[in-house]
Length: 168
Image 1 (cartoon, rainbow, N blue to C red):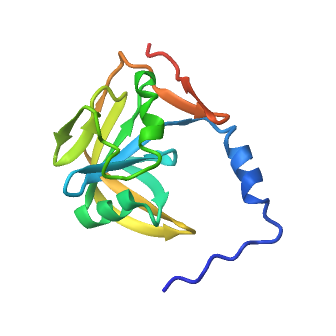
Image 2 (cartoon, one colour):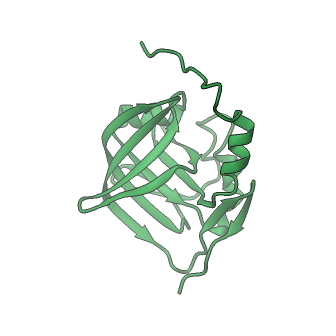
Image 3 (tube, one colour):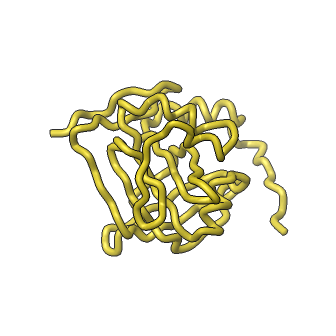
């Protein structure tokens, strides 16, 4: 059993921390896996972890349905949304996890759903899981990846989405 989180009285309030982090631009990603059908959620804490072997780190709420399905399936995909897909940000952020794929074009790569028209797609096998505060850190070993230079990446900054830098 995990001990409850203790709040450090010297730490800033959660709303102040969220406001500060909103000034840190990040790509908007949708992390996906399969249940009886595809499931997924938006995630902003995704990063390249290693180039050789290729790996990524994803942070999802420990209570997330998607995180639990990833643990069960042992694999997942990271989809960096393109500016053209900005409407998917809210669709994958809330509501019934089994309805989030409604009307969303995707393909299956190595058993994992990869969103069509994503700026970047990465499929991973689950290497390790670490508990950190109220989140799970999912370390994935990359087994497939793709990028689309014709799509502008979607960036989240100051509580809004913006087009990222154009491909050169």
